[in-house]
Amino acid sequence: MSAEIIYGSELAQKMRDEMKEEVTALKEKNIVPGLVVILIGEDPASMSYVKGKQKASDYVGVDSELITLPEKTTQEELLELIDQLNNKSSVNGILVQLPLPDHIYEQAIIEAISPEKDVDGFHPVNIGRMMTGKDTFYPCTPYGIIKILQSKSIEIEGKHAVIIGRSNIVGKPVGQLLLNENATVTYCHSRTKDMRSYIKNADILIVAVGREHFITGEDIKEGAIVIDVGVNRTSEGTLTGDVEFDSAKEIASYITPVPKGVGPMTITMLLHNTIKSAKKANN
Ligand code: GUN
Image 1 (tube, rainbow, N blue to C red):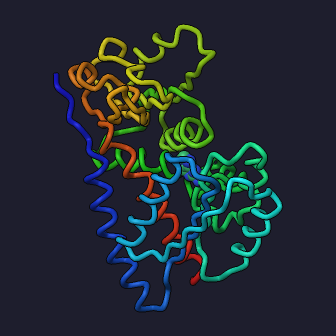
Image 2 (image 1 turned 180 degrees about the vertical axis):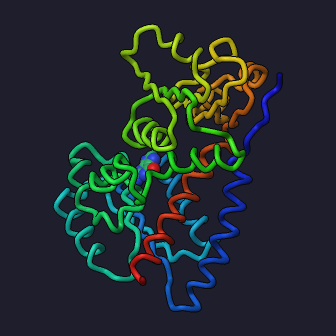
C-alpha cells in the first residue's frame, strides 16, 4: 500500500482564496480584520515565521502590523503594549511570537491578551472553552490538523488517535480537539514506557517531537493516518519532519509531507481566527 499524500499547502491555498473573498465582502461593510504580531528579539526561526504571517495576511487582505521590539524589552513594557492593543478597536487579533526571552514570564503575557483577541487560542479562557467543547479560538496548528483530516473526509469518531509530544502549542490541544471529535486519545511523551506499543496501535498518529526520523514505517500500523508536525533542519540544510517519509508512506493510508504539510495550515488558521474575531466584534 502506498499512502495518499495530503498536501496541507493545497488546502491552505484554497482556504486563503476563500478568505480573500470573504475579507473583500467584509470591507464593503467597513469591516477590516486587523492583526498585530509582536516579535521580541531576532531569533531567526521566529523571524521567518513572522514573515510568513505578514505575507499571508497581505494576500488575504487582513490588515497586519508587525511590531518588532529589542531583546531587552521588559515584561512591564510588553504588558503595557498589550494593554493598549486590547483597547484598540481596529485590532481584532494579537499574537506574541513565542518563545520569549527568559526574563519575560510567558504565561503572564498569554494571560494579558484579551481572550476575545487571542487568535492563538492560548489564553486559559479559550483553552477552557475548547476543553468544554465550546466554539472559540482554537490553537492554530491543532485546528489546521483537524481541517486537514476533514478535507479528506477522514472519520475521526471512534478512532484511536495517538499524540507524540505534549506541548501546550500542539500536542495537548490537538488531543483535545480530536477528543471533541469523539476519538479515543492517547498521549505519549518523553517519560512514556514502551511508546512503540502505543504507536503501533494508532489509527491516527500525530507526531510533534522535533526529532528527525523519530518514526519509521516499521513503527506504524498498516493503514494508519500519519500527521507529521515536526520541522527539523537536516545536516544538508533542508527541512524534514519527525517521520521518515519514504518508509512510512508504504504502510500508511494517508500521510502529510514536510514541508508543504501541516505548516501552511498554521498561518491559515491564524487568519481564520482573526477574521472570526473581526466578525464577532462587529456583530
Ligand atoms: N511559536 C511557534 N508556534 C507558535 C504559534 O503558533 N504561536 C505563537 N504565538 N508563537 C509560536
